[in-house]
Image (cartoon, rainbow, N blue to C red; front, side, top):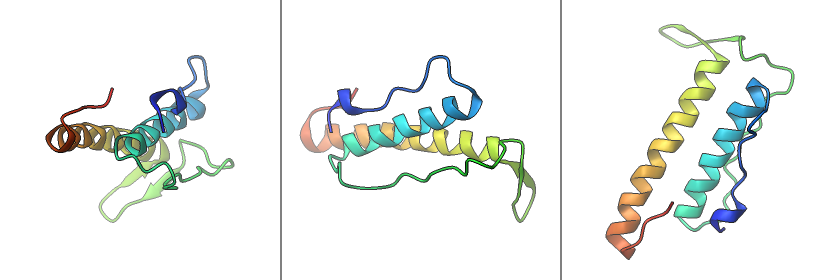
Length: 95
């Protein structure tokens, strides 16, 4: 996968499209960094669900919005860690 193959998040999308767009971008970035374009890590959000819907966690209730933003945050963090490993192993970093 090249950087040009990564999906761009929509600039004027609705809330769900923007959030899932950023998650797709960061997942594609991680795949690009580890050079495994055949991996299929994508999880499709349910089209019928609302981001305001509450998911029950053992200690608290969380909105689907919070869960999605947390996935984006964690995926982006792993991209940074992948950069460090790639630089140490190959002497190059991603963008």
